[in-house]
Image (cartoon, rainbow, N blue to C red):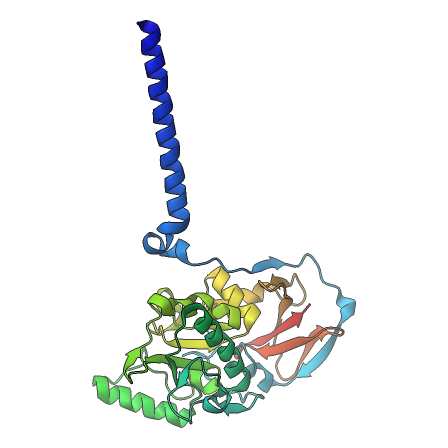
Length: 321
Ligand SMILES: [Zn+2]
């Protein structure tokens, strides 16, 4: 009798263990695949395929210098334009009409909307990727470059719309709008039926939020950064900053204000930032503080690089390795 009971107990234990094992496997598989998007949005977001590390050293012999005047800090992909730092730059890349330069994976409000040419190029790539992933082609670029005068009119419109004097969290004061750089754009949705919706970046459109960094774009005013950016959440407003920089901001979960500070940990004299994107492209990035008057900015003598002002107090050199 006892033996039989033992056998029954043992087989009962075994069945229980098997059940637990199946349950554990089911939970792990569920967590990994099925429910990650809905229950854990943070885990549902694909981790950026980008490596960020500090260089252990640099080789000074491989650098030379270029001299930049004070206007240099107001030019380039990384200019920070906000309520503290007005835009004073004139970008060297000419503006182009989006309509003339776009692919057919998205729409543009009219033939006047214009952007920096390399921004349209990057946006074409992003919207081609979006179309491949979703089959959707109704994203509409409603605003790109704006002059200070355009911005002045927008502020007046907002004031009469809202009956508020202070609309600073809704629209930038003239001179303080990122749209004046030609590197920022606003999206809406314009369906084939001719219906316009706000671009909220939800559902299939969330792809753009998740993948923008691969094309050098960042969501400029995220919900969790309103204290830092000084602007309400704007799911429709994207800014071009360049591929390695957008990747780092995505990985570190920081907005442009924070990123400009973050880069100061990597001055030319110390360790440089090293980045590898998902395509295997590697970059070296460092910061150079601006001197009064002219600044001798160290740049690599034997490699391609871009140099951008931060529109605040210095330069960022991005070396292609
Ligand atoms: Zn905008």
